[in-house]
Image 1 (cartoon, rainbow, N blue to C red):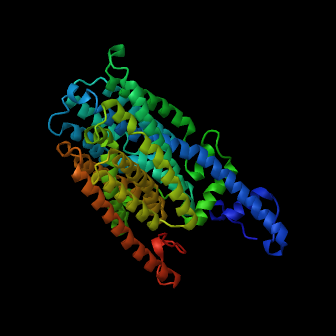
Image 2 (image 1 turned 45 degrees about the horizontal axis):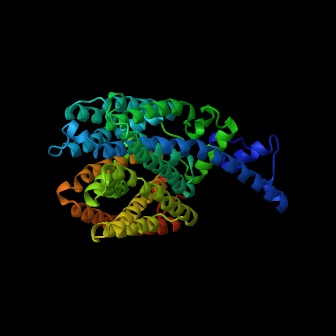
Image 3 (image 1 turned 135 degrees about the vertical axis):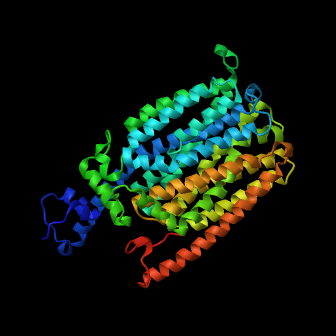
Length: 493
């Protein structure tokens, strides 16, 4: 029998060698019962590895992504306190500028920071940028002018630029295509749970106004900054490396399990190994038109998520008549609810291998939610509309992340696409920071119409993609096309 290198072994070969070391097995001559026992043993090993990855990677990914959202939660909660007047952010568009300047800085550094995840390793890079984020947030509590706030917002954007695209990329390297949406949903769920809890914590911290010589909004930044620094330290020990290097992570996989984890990804799409880095190998993927379709989806999606995450307390206060404290508190329940549609839609999407229909369903739910928010007078109905809208856009993050990750191959292409779509996501955030206009209270009709229109456009883009993917798969089955330069690869739609 010819010797097979580690890189050429399939998942079945790797697992079989670990279960039956030293044996040369002729599978064709095995009776059915022994074949089934072997198959069950292989599945058990894969389940054990997958569970370890779920517990380690999805947990820390949700927490780290939540720090970015916590920033929006803190500044939005602080916006209904004395912060705006204390820093003179209530003049002109200064508050909106403080929001989108963060995003501009993040956009500029997303691709280099995502490349750094592969270059320096997830443990070192995520730990470093998280600690930086925490220190800068702590400093934000002590700014005295709006210009100082703007300067620190730029540094915050740089420090957190690689978190979401880097984690999206890392998760996509660990799971097969049919497993990804649930894992993205788990990351997103952890993110929104922390954000919702953060709103409640901010309500409590606002009650500390005057304690220790600090105002309520300053306490919010102090506590968040301290938590971020602490999580940066924990990240160094808890974060996992890429599958082929997973045995180097602390208290994680054995070298044998690392080989199995890498082999199952290689079997799924054949891109577990990254080529040596060169800018040309990264930027060449700008020629793929699919990248820009995904960018449009992310841009349109974040128009809504930014307007809700940053302005929900203001909408509750100015649009529905709640007090400052109640506005902070009532902004939490819609995010707790959002976990439900995110998990359920992801379970359905992974089980039936559906991506586009899930996105379309969530878009329709969001449109209904915004109609309730914008075209009714009853406060309860409007508040329920925030639940539908929030749940739909949170669920669509996981669906869109899976949609793009399922339909590309190659390590550097994953890096490029993750960074590029996140940059356009940020651009959508810039636009979203301006669609909730204070003079339009209590209806905020610009935000309502832009949010509805953006999701009608998302439906159109997904329908166009699905038709293209369907036709490409037909040609691939007939042997007329090789998709993504990978034999046997087919689009998921």
